[in-house]
Image 1 (cartoon, rainbow, N blue to C red):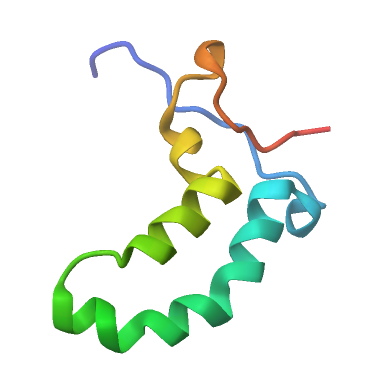
Image 2: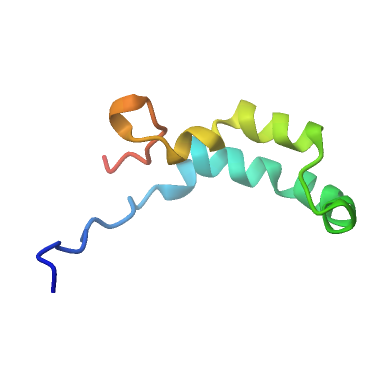
Length: 74
């Protein structure tokens, strides 16, 4: 082993109430609407990209210290 311990945090019990999860669930029907276009074009339509941006999904890959969206454990 390289000495790096695996993170043992668990998801909060109220995971469905977290803003990022709520946003994902709200977008689920739209993603289905775009399925054919996504497959055909092999890229996100601009409107879908904007919806994901507005929901904050791209901030989820940003480190917390730089303003990432995080799932709260409390």
